[in-house]
Every structure is written in C-alpha cells, then in structure tokens.
Length: 92
Image 1 (spheres, helix red, strand yellow):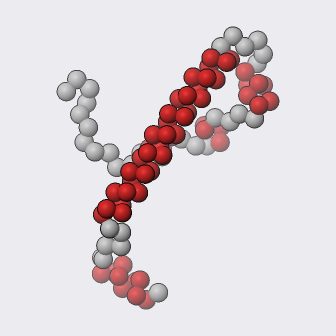
Image 2: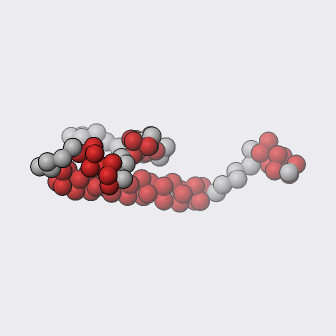
Image 3: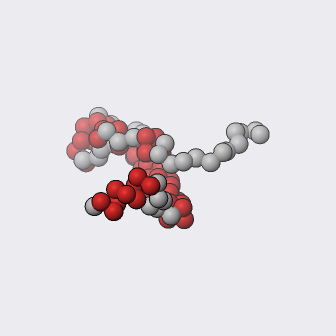
C-alpha cells in the first residue's frame, strides 16, 4: 500500500496514454450507440403511438417502458464526460 502512495505522490503516470485513448474511444463508441438506439426507439415509438386511441402514458406503463429521463439518466450528462476535440462550427 505504501508503494502505491509513493507512486501517487511522485506523480508517476499510472495509465499509459494509449490505454487512456483506447478507453476514451470505447466509451465514445458506447455513447454513440446509446444515442442511435435511443433515436431508433423514439422513431418507432412515435410511429406506433401516432394515432393511438388510448392514453400513451398508460400504454407505456402497461408495457413497462421507461425513458432514460424517467429513471434519472441523461445522455447529455454522460456525453459531457468525453473529452471533445476542437470541432469546427457549421459553415466554417
């Protein structure tokens, strides 16, 4: 345990840059998959419930469907954890 404390105090790099990059890339990929799946679900859900005669909230409850927001998750909050590169704005 003391060895770990000494390493931390000396400022030794504990994670190699290439490992950090690999984890960041994998995390970014998972966030992008989440975003795509969320969009696909919303498209299908909106199509199914577009002319639905019953109350949509009741139908959602009956099926056991929960939106991310219903359970306190925010895609935006998780995507903010990704270090963004310098992107050009639109039209630049």
